Image (tube, rainbow over all chains, first blue to last red; front, side):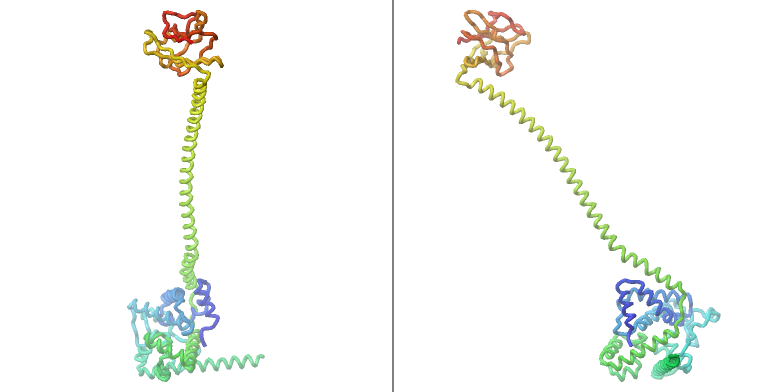
Length: 187
Length: 251
């Protein structure tokens, strides 16, 4: 499944200078991207700034997006991730701790809500699968860095990620079957 | 082309998804995706799972962020949409301004030229008028002199007016007498030349004349035997002062 035609139409409008298209993309994807940014930087204010920066980058470089190469979300995710990693690197206050999280300040973090916590279907995964997903997609680690953090070989780590994604798909699939069944019963 | 097996075994699709591949690797994966539909389907499924997971992990950002993005994007939009027509309008205004100024300058020049030409024309007109009246006068004179009926008579001055000379033109047919006195010596202001006709020994007044006029018209007297010029007190006399006779000529 590629980028939906709906998204393509919205992106075309943005390319032709219609800024309301940007707000539509924001309404649809800002939550998912904010989830990524906030879990990576663990600082509400900074995450808000980075989300803003991410959407300004999307707005400025939308002509660089190629729908034939993948979904808009994937492209936007890469921008959000790189923007956040750059900000964390330049701040140079990055402290990596034993629990594999990225902190700006340990003390603040103890009192602040734990943004890194994942929710939904992921919670039904086995712990090492959850951790693999969290590291690569929500902590800003590369696969290479993440397997070292988990202390497993790279190949094993990659299969963790693949298995985790596969299991997630299965849970989504089951959910859809339940919904379909409920709808059938209601009908 | 990169092996499909290698891509799947090494989990390159996952790395490609997060943008962790080098440019070369990424373009190889892209090439493989373009050529292998089953591989493309796997990547599509991966992207779909990834997006679904993203949506599930979504955290709603505070509305202030959207407002800030709007603020950051909107002024640029205004600038984008408004500068173009504004600069075009400014360009046109400048062109109109310059051309108006140029036309005004031209107009002012034209006004000046017109005024000058009008003055010139007026002056020329007056010159033409003068020339015309002078020509008419001259041609009249010429006609009155250069006429087969006219007899020109030269009156040479005597010892009272040595080297003096006056020319009289007598037209018996039209009964006209004209005198050119320019050759006579000038007189003091209390004296004047006067011309007389001798008719049977009697001097009859023909009129006085100044010396600064080319042709003076005098009274024609019938049966005159001679014409005589005397010097008289200013205003002329009723009878000639014969001692003061300057010149005479017999008809």
